[in-house]
Image (cartoon, rainbow over all chains, first blue to last red; front, side, top):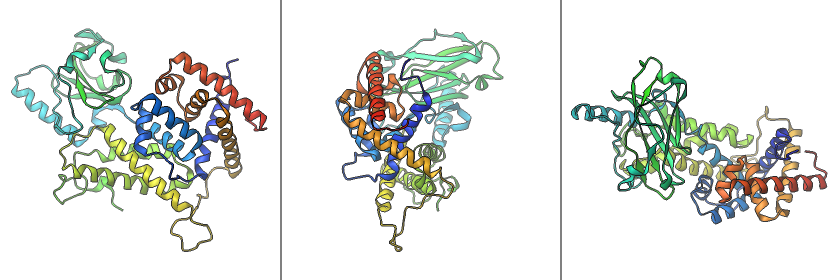
Amino acid sequence: MNPMKRDDGELAKLRRGFAALSEETPASAACLAPEKIWEAVRGGLPSAEIREIVAHTAACPACAEDWRLAMAMQRPETAKILPAADRFSVGRRLRNWSLAAAAVLALAVVGVQWLRLSGPEAIYREGGQAAVHSLIADGQSLPREQFLLRWEAPALAGATWDVEVSTEDLRVLASGDDLREPQLQVPAGALAGLPAGTRILWKVEATLAEGGRVGSPTFVATVQ
Amino acid sequence: MVTPQTQKPASPGTGGSPFPSELDLVALRDDLKRAVAQTCPRWMADRSDDIIQVALLRVVDIYRKREGNAEFSSFYLRKAAYSAVIDEIRRLRRRQEVPLEDETAETRYDPPADGPDPERVATSRQVGRAIQECLGQLVPPRRLAVTLNLQGHSVPEVGRLMDWSTKKAENLVYRGMADLRGCLDGKGVVR
């Protein structure tokens, strides 16, 4: 029998035991900088460095706990995928209103534009749009229950993804932040009430492992 | 205590509310609460609100120092908040080292009354200590694989983090866990 699978309860007990050590072990001067642990969990460091950090956590319960906290904060469910109305920040809403105004001025130019303020965290690659390809044919009709948007970007390995999905009148239906997988399932509820044939606009933006961002063109899918 | 949700938003650096409207602090606070609740030991449970509050203030401070000019992805915000939470946890842990008999100490180890069964906690710690000893005896690649597995990573994640193929990661986790079990059995640890 496969010992990895033979007893989930046993593995859970081992994990509990490993985690329990942190309760009685204070952080020491040898503990790693939290930023290092965060980046290691994210896979944002050279593998040799990540190995050193993991080796340290094997012997340091306090840093092992820090690792678990970073895991918990980087999990996809923490980087929520929810209908946009439930989760958009004020800033993003303002950005979308700006977009709506710009779209009107542009006389219904198709596409969701993301207006981003320039800053040290926002470094865009020239010509990056060509690096991101939709795996959904342009205008392809998708069932509401399986409205799965997928894309690929072979040149952007290790990137995480922000996605925004909207109607042509720029009503945001769903979004995802910091996704590790290049796909987003739009909840059926977000599409409820839209007539068959409604065109859905979507756009993704990569945050690169080495820093910087790359945006995609606006893609179009249709509600079945 | 200041509660972000109740603050009137103001532009950063204007001298009004310390919480700029551009920051989705409510969502960030929820994320932090969830992560801390999942991860932190029970002695910290009654302090988690304070930890999170300090973290949020740190994030706002970073934001204001940049005068609101920077675009903050939610991922960046979480990283900043994470660092602040860890700093606060480490600070509390250091204070936890204060001797229990020192009545003047500000913070003492004080587990909540409705915590888990003490016997179960003691057993978990015993298992934990044995695991730590056994990990030290594994060959390095297996030690890394098992450590990540015990932390809750899947085999593909282990492969990605260690820059191994999934097959290699699977192999090392498989063999490493077998070694660990053998070592624990040798110590008489009931699994």
